[in-house]
Picture 1 (cartoon, helix red, strand yellow):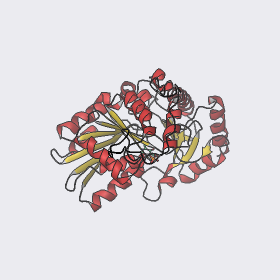
Picture 2 (cartoon, rainbow, N blue to C red; picture 1 turned 45 degrees about the vertical axis):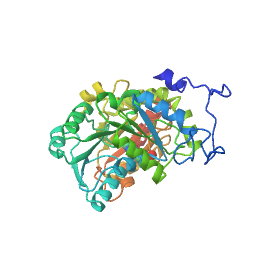
Picture 3 (cartoon, rainbow, N blue to C red; picture 1 turned 135 degrees about the vertical axis):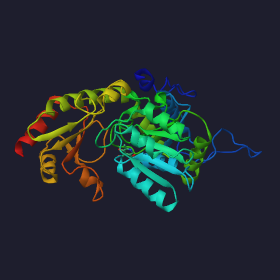
Picture 4 (tube, rainbow, N blue to C red; picture 1 turned 60 degrees about the vertical axis):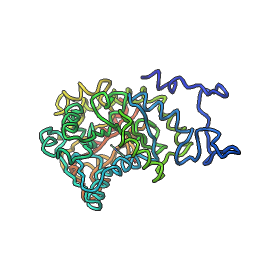
Length: 374
Ligand SMILES: Cc1ncc(COP(=O)(O)O)c(C=O)c1O
């Protein structure tokens, strides 16, 4: 995978020999005198040469038949749920990326779509939540933001398929470097490309990759074209550039995060460290099976005390930047409940860390000095 990423699947521009794709900014494409298109492109909301290499690389590294890029992760999430009809049913975890769940709650109320939320660590709860013949989409996320609970994708796929539902996996946090969700039976894999895929906190994007070219996939394509949540050409170009180093970045962030998690696991000022790479994590065994090249750069600290103590630690860091988001080269710290708002189910003493590619000793020292000040 590292070779395919570094070379963007051995990309060479046919016209010029350039080893990076050209940036095509046209929104519209010429027709000949018979009014036939002169190429396969017509209008850039429907199709865009700037997406071609990016989508090819995304489909390739996740092992799908096709990929679609979107203007943001949420544009891709919405495109999936747009294919659920009134009267059908969706299942999702009780704790998950709050934006996706907010959207799900909103559309389920407005469009008479049933919604069941299940406890992520409990497969029996998922089994009970699906309604055979009625559940249209089972949406899971693994590791789950921000507790990093792990869901067994193969088991979830079996449950979803027995009920006749499509399994969609939000694999933003694992990335294809460590988990190729389609290989475990998922039908569609989703990434907020804003995170690890791009990796530099300077592009918003979303990616869907499908295992099959079926009716739902065709529907999703129509939704993208007609609702227009499309990725701009320069963002597509930047995203592909970022992806060339995805493998290296993800490996380094995973190594740093594991070292940090181990270092702070028994710290006197912390209740717990949540990281799937720790043996103490309840999802560790599944993570070892499912995350074959590192446990990623995301971890959370449960501080002894409540919101005040957690926020004081975030306030005193000097290297960790106080900002939301994840998967960038720089390390971030956030008081997650404050970011999610008053309805958040996230514990008040939880600090979410996105570990970057900096020097690990310096990151550890920064957290140590901040915990010391508490
Ligand atoms: C797990 C997860 N899924 C989806 C999203 C939404 O992606 P975007 O911000 O690119 O719209 C995010 C963003 O934080 C996320 O962390």
